[in-house]
Image 1 (cartoon, rainbow, N blue to C red):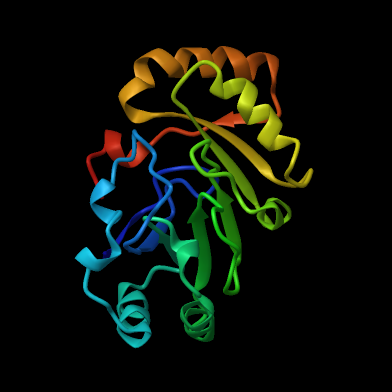
Image 2: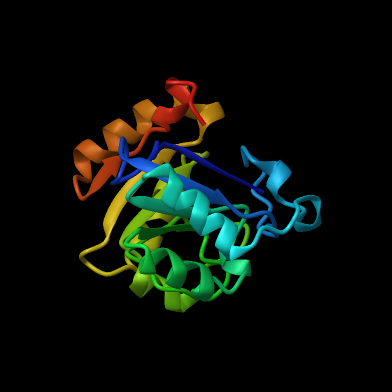
Length: 193
């Protein structure tokens, strides 16, 4: 769908320079998705692996974040192999709806109630980022956290349109459940892509 140089706005690598590759195509259907234009894969022209890797190298960013849409819809082996051959770290942001392909330095699993993650992805997650839209999502987050490895970093992130309501709840929740950390969409505060 698009690729661009920016700062990672969320999670563990927040504030790091990163080249984003956003793939078109998603069938998860989150009602609060902020990139619904990514859903129809056919609406976005195909771009070769070579073009994407060349743009990533030219950006100078040490990290490429592959996101979507839902990137696990695709076999990402060729893309990640080519990026790693250039010495670039490969990061994935996924709902985990489909099995992982490719070679990853970092996997951010952001599970969705709308379409459960593939069981195999939980053990591969370096970061679990749960979007909090309803108060009940905190209880659901605990169930998801029980499925990842003990080394996985745990984040609660208020859904952007509900941030004023959910951020205070999350803060109070983290005070009594300190294994969690707060993730905010800093790129939206700064108005950068």
